[in-house]
Amino acid sequence: MQAIIYQRYGGPEVLELAEVEPPKVHVDSVLVRIRAAAVNPADLQMREGLADANVPTYFPVIPGWDIAGVVEEAGPGAPEFRPGDEVVGYVRTSVSHRHGGYAELVATDVHALAPKPAALSWEQAAALPLTGLTAYQAITRVLDVRPGGVPSGARRRGRRRIDGRPDRGGSRGDSAGCRRG
Image (cartoon, rainbow, N blue to C red):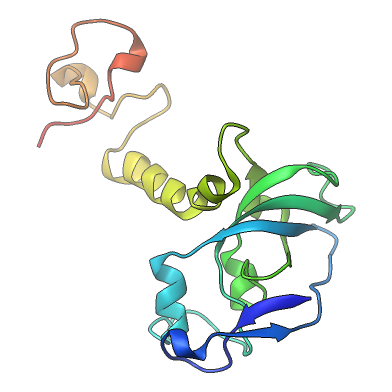
């Protein structure tokens, strides 16, 4: 299969198109035919060697943490997905072991995938995983949102809409439940 790879750290000049062995499907993994892959800062930092102290690297690397594609095959421990399912994925672990999304195919753990939202294009869906994870972490860790959508302690202080104005009751969808300041 064809893939974009790099065999040493550096800038965009280290990227090359190469013929590589296709990834193997394991018990809990899913083989995905890539329709779109996103470029994010983590991909660039890894390619430049800035994450070398924290992330094991096995050359050649096929970059691309964020993908959107169609399931080709699912291992026996991955009954959640079937051939033909449209998926998005955050395949960071696969990248650290050589196989990322800048390829025709990627095999990744079943827990790294989710159904592709039907309303999104392939390109929009591929841009979702890392940005979605970042938003989720901001909501749950920084804003401390609890189940039910209200930050802890917000009931005592009153909720505010995302634009900072007081919530006047409306539907729950009107309030972001965000803290001021």
